Length: 155
Image 1 (cartoon, one colour):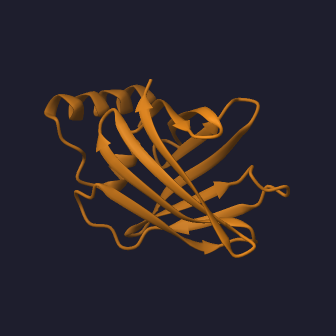
Image 2: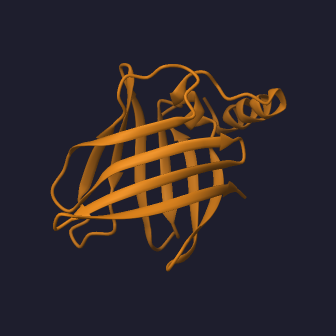
């Protein structure tokens, strides 16, 4: 699916006022530019785009000079999230996965399935409407959780 087709897909659902029934299509419909305020850090930008002919979704959080990338792909009846972390000195990779999916979900929860410590161990995405969604990232380091709560607005 090209980015133009993805934009048309998002516009069609905005006109209909409904989210796609398939959770992976819900993620695809987020393609675009976003921003959120992160207390203590300031305003963050995020870019979401379809890659690999629509088979994967690339999420880039931060600025062009300082960012983190996550790749979302379908894995049978779940969604796999591979996160390339920039918050740790060694820049490790964390893998998280949803449970079995069902249609019409307004929330996706990704649970840690493998990495080195410290790592992002939990990600919860909540879909509000076509112009708003939130992500709650939980990082564990030395047995302590740090939660990053982001509410995105389409730019």
